Amino acid sequence: MVPIALIAGGILAITTRGFTALPAGSFFSILAPLFMLVVAVVVIATTARSGRGSSERLMRLVRFAELNGFTFSTRDAEPNYPGMIFRIGRGRQALDHIVRPAPRFLDIGNFRYTTGSGKNKKTRTWGFMALHLDRRVPHMLLDAKANNFLGSNLPAHFSRDQVLSLEGDFDRHFTLYCPREYERDALYVFTPDLMALLIDEAGAFDVEVVDDWMFVYASAPFRMGDGPQLQRMLRIVDTVGAKTVDRTDFYADERIGDRRINLVAPQGARLRRGIPWATILITAIVVAVWFGMSLVR
Image (cartoon, rainbow, N blue to C red; front, side, top):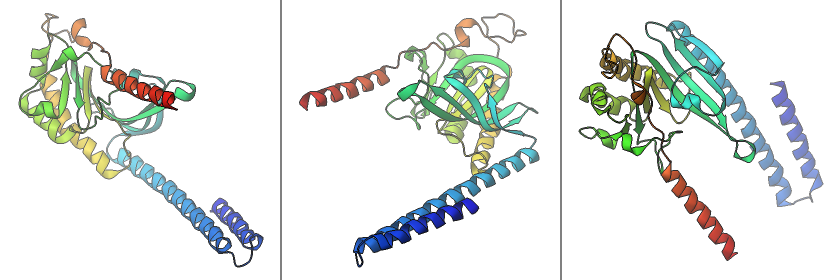
């Protein structure tokens, strides 16, 4: 409270001098210092309230972790996950995340990385959930359409010839990518009951299964410590996660030839990357418009 009091006192002194420095009776001399003081008070109060709110959420998160068998960590560098967001950029770190090793490994939190340099330097933070599976499965990705704007929000682009259309209205909610010649395997995993759960519980999130992991991604960071946010993620674990575990529990890649070997053949282990044509087109249009406007000037 001392720094805030000093700041407020300094601002009050400045505004008081402002009254005497301006011509007497000036309308501006009365309103300007008062406006400055009001703005300063609002900024200070908002900052203090935000700080208290963050501390309270952090304490709630710590208590939640202790009561539910999780371990809480504010920062861990280079989490060793095979999901696509964990292989991008530098300075990769999991933030404010909670980990439960048993009965099935679960990690919920935020992930941050940096790309580019100089004026092109960008830092991005995702919300994520990582759930360990029993069996390795083909690399499959569900790109949610609810969080897309002028194209996919995903940080990686995959070849469109790997898109598989599913029954019902599932395609209205997600675009499913699976490796070529693994379409039957995808249908084995994504049964109608799992598709219904994905639409109802995870329609706003992107979902990836790769190796023996399931990941749920949010393009904005989670408000860790926020009760409804945590409850929603745990509900996804109990519904979508549990059904995914059930559907993959006996999966075996027939190309391996021995179901005792928990592996996926190389052609199914990773999706093939593609060219981001939509991004290239939008960028070209923006550059063309800018160049045209510069010529007009």
